[in-house]
Amino acid sequence: MIVGVIGSGSIGPDLAYGFVSALASDSGSRVLLHDINPEALETGLARIQGYVKKGVDRGKLSPKAAAAISGKLTTTLDLNDLAECDYVLEAATEDLAIKKIILNNLEKVVRPDCLIGFATSGLPRTMIAAETQHPDRCFVNHPFFPAWRAMPMEVVLSDNTEYSEKMMETLKRLGKVPVETADVACFAADDIF
Image (cartoon, rainbow, N blue to C red; front, side, top):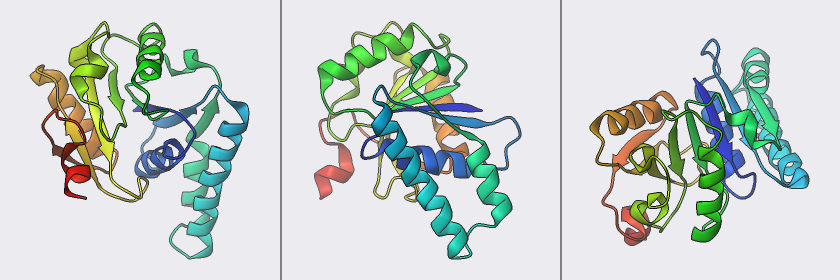
């Protein structure tokens, strides 16, 4: 499985680390962390490397596991590098206008069957997916905190049963417990808090 994460700010690196940890023993799997800002990408990579080092120092990761995690993670400034992804999670911003630009550019690059998630905490799926070419393969994937370790992830599914089932299975493979949520602003977790 090839996974892309867009955005190396507050949550993208944590999600990338969680995904690459789940896929560390999967032959042929890898995770790509993308950002348009080189400094943000370096900072995000440093955070992930810090998690790996802490895991080794605390005895929770063997040096072999740490090497496997590091070997499956790639950073990139070029969106075209996400072309072969099976799943891409946009975690760049909560700004709807910017999300739409990112998704428009992303859809020009990825395969038509690539699943696309948005790590939003409050924007409805219908608003974000409305202007995409393939809205049926677009989903809200709202992570719990801390994103790299928390297993639950709220999911707003599309009307396409095949893509929705594939999305749920993908999240499970990535170590998440998908929790189906209604397509309303803020979703269940934020509403409770």
